[in-house]
Length: 297
Image (cartoon, rainbow, N blue to C red; front, top):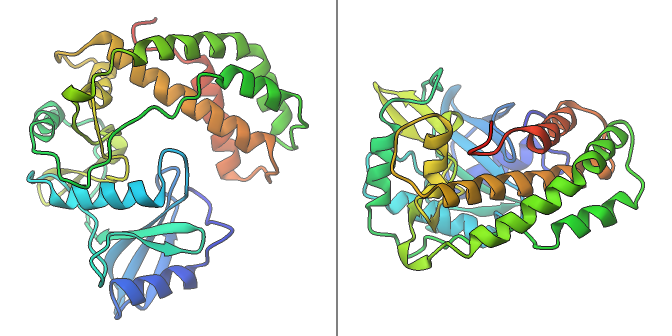
């Protein structure tokens, strides 16, 4: 997230890092990077040492699923994982206010300008690993009644400053959301748990990091046992020539799209201030309601 959280302070983050990971930590700085979670640089004697993350409790990420995902990532037998570190008691996550804290080592580097050429090979290796015992299994978070829930939401007042514009967008595209939800339900029946593999979930360029002359995949909170297409959708959307089931790629395109629409609609219907994150949410809602799907032009 671009703005610091309203319910957790820098001192709270420093305290949990000192208690659970690094007692020598002496400073933290909130970093306006990523989306969904909040991130801090953690210093020891003036040197960046750890990268702290606070994940909110969401349908797609609960405290239990986050612990399982981070523990599974740390156990993977592949050399491109930048994993979370266990705390003093061996867990990878700890509560921090209403959120869930985790840390990795600080890794000096940069995001690549575009998705790296070696990503297909990296994902092929990931999908071939033996699943760690803590890896959570994927299940859809899309309610088949999403269209009706949005109609109910439209009956409520939408808060200023951005709510009215968001409401107009939802009204304009409500029928399409209903059609997408029905299509999602049909495609979901094609997912076979017997074929599930370890997936990163979001291996796009924003979760690639180049450091020490190699590429790492970061942000493993979305690790799940799922169809390969959960990751391959990224490659297909980038125009890569990879073997895939088009129906399952479209399923995961719809999964992402519908979950984002519901999340952003709830956000902008409720109280907000119009800060940078709120404007980003409105941009995200606009994008997901209007962009082409996989297989459409």
